[in-house]
Every structure is written in C-alpha cells, then in structure tokens.
Image 1 (tube, rainbow, N blue to C red):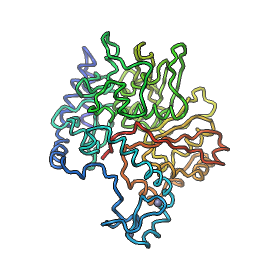
Image 2: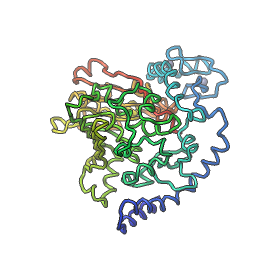
Image 3: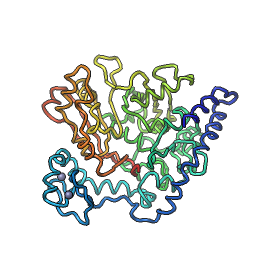
Image 4: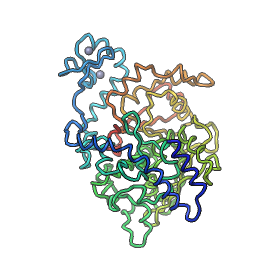
Length: 469
Ligand SMILES: [Zn+2]
Ligand SMILES: [Zn+2]
C-alpha cells in the first residue's frame, strides 16, 4: 500500500494543468490496483446474501457469559436477573461471572430496554433487511470497489478479513476533498444529499427553516432523498454531531436577524477524514451560524504530517473544508480545521480558544482511560461535552475514581488506569460496531463531578443504521 501512496505523491508533484481533475484521474489509476482485493467479498456476498442469519441478530445471547466458560448454549439456562441481557450455562458460572459483569450490568439493562428503538432505527431502510452489516450493504450498492475503480468516500479496506474504513492506507486524506460530489458519493444523483447543487438556479432546496422529526425517515423526506439511498451510512457522522450539540443545548438558530459563531472541538477523528465534505450537512442544520470544527487525534496529526506537500498543510492547523449554504437555506457556514499539534488532546485552561463544546463520536469512553483527563478537564472548565458511544455499558464503565487518580499525576500514566484485558473483553459482547447509540453530557464544575455522576444518556436517533462487520 505504501507504494501506491508513494506513486500518488510522485504523480502529485508531476501534476500540472487542471490540478484537480488530473489528480483525480491519477488517483483512480493507482486505486484500480486495489480493486482485486474486494473480489472475494463480492463472491462471499453472492454465496450468503439470502441467508436470513445475516440479518442483525438481536435475539437472546447464545454463549455462556462467564469468561472462564463461554460454551455455546442451546438455550439460556441462567439469565442475569439484573439486565436479562446475558446468560450462563449454570448457577456456578453465573456466580463466577458476576464479579466482572456487575460493572456493566446496569448499562446492559439500559441497552436491553432500548432494543426495540434500536431495531426501529435499523428497520427504517429497505436495505438493512438484507443484512445489516455495513460491508454487505456496500457490496449490494456496488460501492466497495469490487472490480471497479475505487475512488470516493467509501474507501474501505480489508484487514484480517474485516472491512474497515481506512484512509491512512488508501487515499491521502485530501484526495476526497478534491473529488466532485458525484465521484465522492458514487451514487445515482437522486440518492446523493447534494450540497453543491443547492447553489444552482433551479435547485430544489430543502425547506427553510429545517423541519424534520428526529428520525432518518423524516430527515430523508426533508432532504428530498429516497429511502433507498444508503447516504445515511455516512450522514450519520454529521447528524450525530448535530444530535450531540442539540443535546448540549446548542440548538440551531433560525432567526435571520442574528448570526453567531460556534467553535467545536472534535476529538478522535479517524474514518471520517475520508469524507469530510459530508460534514457540509451541518451548514444546513445550523443556519445563520459560523461553525468551526477543529479536529484532534492521532490520525488527524498523521494526516497533517503526511500532507506537507499540499499547499494548505503548511499550517499546523490547516483549514481543509469550507462550505456555506445558499441564502435560501439560511447561509450557515461550516469550516473544518485539522489540528496537527499533538496527538493528545486537552482543552487548555484560560486559553483564548476554549471551545463552545467538545464532541467525540464512537468514543469508547469506558475502554480507553486516556479519556479521563479530557472528561475531567471539560468538567472543570465547564465546557459542554458530548459523545456517542458503542453501547451503554461503555458509558456506565467510566470510572470517576480512576479519572481522579489519573489527574493527580502530573503526567497521567496510561498503564495504571487502563482497563484490564478481562474488563475490555466484556465491552465487546454485542459487537455493536458503529451503532452509536448514546450521548453523554458531562457538564459542570469539578466539585460537582466528584460528588455526583453527571452522566446523562439519550438515544441518538441518527445512529448508523448498520453494524461495521
Ligand atoms: Zn458456563
Ligand atoms: Zn446483568
């Protein structure tokens, strides 16, 4: 894969004439070599597409939940009385499993209660019924690059038999930014949530002010998209940001007499760097607003570093995307900056650039202790903070005591606070993938944080209507 990147870099230097289109053509050429990689997925899909077991299985667990046992169960013999969400083969295993399960039982209970709503969200789309796994959906739509040119936002890659969005080994992060909307989405025009076309004279702009219920179906309707469009598989990123900001009380302003500025720190951006332009949707959702999103995280730093040959990456915090919606849609502006300063994010005290909010999507709060100082400091500085996470258990597992411990060290040591392998294994049992389902709002002063747990969770109606694997 490195060779492809090297080739791209070389080609880029040779580029002249219309830099955008020439570059896209060459990216396509280099990417074609990767197409063969997806052939076996296509074959596999043909083989299994009518298998009902591909449907998302929300039925009862079928393995003994004790880590020391994990034997397959014909039927659950002993179900956890707290959450009704895990089963054991015997009372002995139930007893043995409780020492670890008790950490997540309450979270699991909330998951179980929310199941009908998760299911309803998934079932809004006709294509989820033929296998809710994202790779299968993409194969159905011919978007995985099987035997065809692999350019666009659907830059998925195969690693260990699993499909991951993988911008690092695929296209350089700026490549999708120079694609036309059509080449980015690679969908029939009617299925694209177009931003570019809204500026055309005969454009069918979505109604202003934005009016939709908090559901995909309603959003599609407002946006003029047919429910057959798989656009939600990418739109769930900007819409989850929207859901987070709304949950924090930063509601859109529709009054045209008033314009405001918002700065949002977006932590841990990874896959979404491949399709940043999709975030232009936020300009429609936040009319009369100048919304600056500054992205942080290891992948972001890497992207800035690797981008040194591009003109705009000479800055350590390049502006990589900007979009303003037409006046008829409320003239919202969104700008995305990538912060290349550091791989570790901390909102700094007294800094002029204290954000209006911090958001993170699919954060994994409960499994990664490097979140603790961020959570704590956000609380201390009263910066509204919201995340979507994999499941309730992950959020319930935030250990406030560990968080405080982490802060007593001048340099928080990852080793001492990281969840043990055993604890980690537990968070994985539903293999939820990108089903971002909850919003956490940790807000308030440090003292309050110590006294009481300020976590609140809400269901994110705009979660990804598929799972990753
Ligand atoms: Zn057992
Ligand atoms: Zn339980």
